[in-house]
Image 1 (cartoon, rainbow, N blue to C red):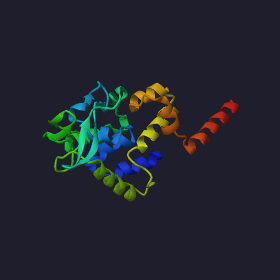
Image 2: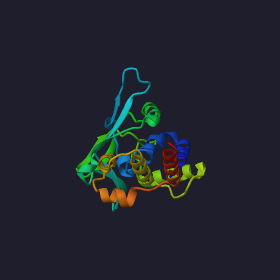
Image 3: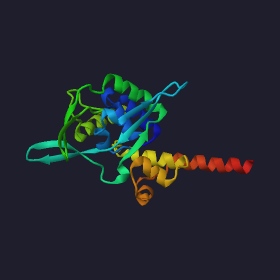
Image 4: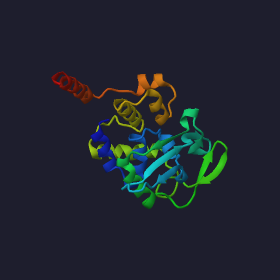
Length: 216
């Protein structure tokens, strides 16, 4: 996805799901990680003299869709690997999205969750309008409608943000282990061979930089 396509999706997705979309498309969270985030997993730190606070989200669990005799539901479970436990800083450009979400859409009452350790209640960061945990299938429908309205590539999906962020981080000179820490991915081979892409416009800009160096 291009920067413009992601921006268009964020503009057209329903307000209630904008922070959730940012977590996936701009910050590389897996869909289950984003859905399972609790209100207490969001830390806001006000910096003296800064126009906006710093926002960080803590990843400690994910939600997986389960279908059984008692219906279909989201099961909350721990990350599959130690790398899944991590903190992800929210980029400054998206901080207003999270501040607005916390003020207007973050629920004030707990939601009953099914977990691998039994049933418990928690205040989630994002819920449906009726206060229930978001189903991954329901969110994909929301995203599909936003893509259609925004007139962007139909191939964009919740996982696209991992490709986008890893590529952008690499372009900024991030080390593979730094990228893996942000994305919760400890296999650098997977980062290189699966997620890391080359933007077409990037090769043009690189050649322009080489040309400028020759002129110097």
